[in-house]
Length: 106
Image (tube, rainbow, N blue to C red; front, side, top):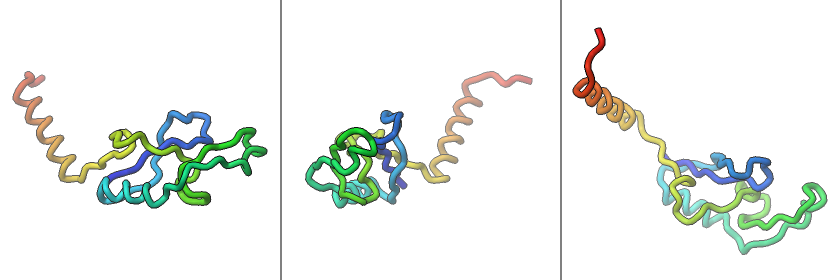
């Protein structure tokens, strides 16, 4: 499973990425992004509410309207969530490494 993280242009902490969608594969998230993209436009309707004009990349009234697009294929925007099996295997490897490389405290 992959989660798409983008930043909300209205948020006071614009640098903070938020989860906005999920899919089984990264390619599905990319397809979702492409389906939401439109020619860049300025949203002047919201200028009175927010005191500025917004440059937008995603379709009006769509789920991504208020988000900035990701930077290319940056992994920070496309995060893989490991399966329970992958987590268990990773923890087992870490445990084995620690048991084999560090002294046991009695």
